[in-house]
Image (cartoon, rainbow, N blue to C red; front, top):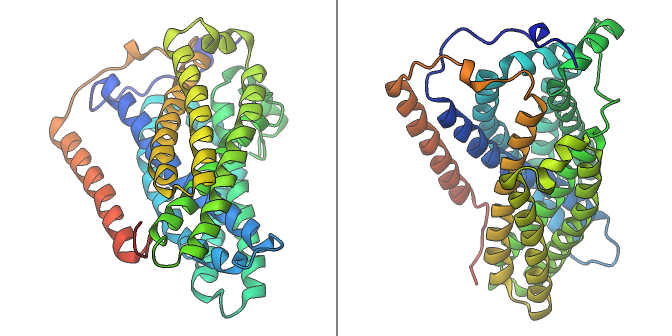
Length: 368
């Protein structure tokens, strides 16, 4: 424990909206961002697995079908990530900025890696079929960069939660080459997000199969089987990874999800029950070739589970920062005009992105 006075002081500028409104928007915008990220990263990983899978006549076709969608999903991930990043800076700026400075060089390299990954994904999407061998290597390179970016983000977020370690990190390397590798929750937390991405990527393949079901049933069935099984196996793995994440937490924080906090405990129970129901429904849909159940019921349940997990993530952050973070200290001066303008533009932007996906042919084909 450190003296709370050693934490940078709260920004004296008043909040432009009530604290609870900004908190709600942080959770909602993060939920949208993580959905796009899961589609993008999970889709890229599964595209590579489809290409390398032996005995499948559609491996290359699935690879390029998914690869063409990854650049637009990466654009959505970045765009939808701006809002939650801004809300984090407004509400938790003194923690997030400090951890960002402590890992300054890895944090700066996120931009470099992101640009390189972006170029690689575009190359595969638009020139990959002309050079299929190079396309596989470039896709692997870009996906690896995306995984590294996620690891750096996890380091930054976990470090922002533990002010007592800041001084030790700074004096061990004031040059900004720190990572938070000594954090017990770092690797299970990172794997928790990456495994979820593979599961949601499997759902994306199911949605692609649904869009092509009548147009090319044999190919659609192959995608359905591959994506559905990927979803099931990754969701099963989440139980193991999630348990590792839970037990790696300090005991007082772990107990929040085991009875000490009613909301956190209920959300954990809902998430586990929802995941089990989704696995059962997907398994039944694969056996019966019921693409509609897999595309809509399983996707809907999974979306609710991810939303519950987003709220749990926020509860955990506040629990970590409880000795230092006191929302009552915020001054509030609500500015409704720019706030409503932001909400209107944000909603319009999300709607426009969905329309663009539709016109771009993200889910092309005749629907079942």
